[in-house]
Image (cartoon, rainbow, N blue to C red):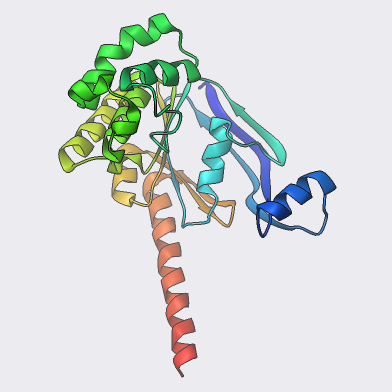
Length: 256
């Protein structure tokens, strides 16, 4: 199978500053005393074309950093990240919008940012507008949109550009129940082609099982499990129970 995402011994470390002033000083002075946080710690895995992979982990496990490296928002401190294909990320759905542009103009803006030519965007424009269901507002400035309308348009653009790698990070909670179900149906439709690779980051094991056949469990920046989705969910749920049990013991000790 064709490899579309490959992490090889990837580590990502952030420098932690108390404030922006300290950050600015650190950039120019190269201070060695600054605290560091390892978000991803020597991670390796391969995702092949057409796979559907859930990335599971508690808050702070490193999921967001993992996605940022796949989308090219940030880069590893060491190791190598290789990505092959057009990536569409349903993360911050309104990211990349110009608030003074109309919705229609932003379709072209985001399409260009994703590497599409105007002719390609034009062929997709009608589908994007119809799916978003914001009607006459499509020709109004985005600054007049509600957060829900911006999310609808962002989702519609992301799923209709025919991505090769689709990354979803809790974005399916967008809008009302009817529109959310429409989004779920669209993702299902995309996955049935067998040509799109899905990377799904979620806290919902129900949705993870619905869409994914494989699961990667992260904890403290490391891969703790990589395999069949049911076993991944079992491992993830076990870690949640252990955390709650540990917290209960701590609270009981504090009260005694």
